[in-house]
Image (cartoon, rainbow, N blue to C red; front, side, top):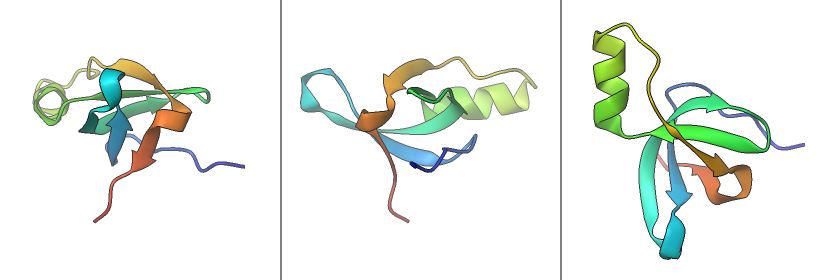
Length: 66
C-alpha cells in the first residue's frame, strides 16, 4: 500500500505537459492529492485558513528530496 501524504509536506508533481513542479500538500484524498504553492500555503497559515489547492492524481505526486 502506498504511503499517505501529510499536510505541509513538500512534494513534486508532474503537471500538464510534463513540467515538474514543487508544491505543498493540503490534503491526501486517496486517489488524488490536493497541493498548493508555497506562497498560498504560507498565506493560509498566517491567515489561519485552509489553503486553496488543486487536486493531482496520486501517481503524479512524489515526496520531494531533502
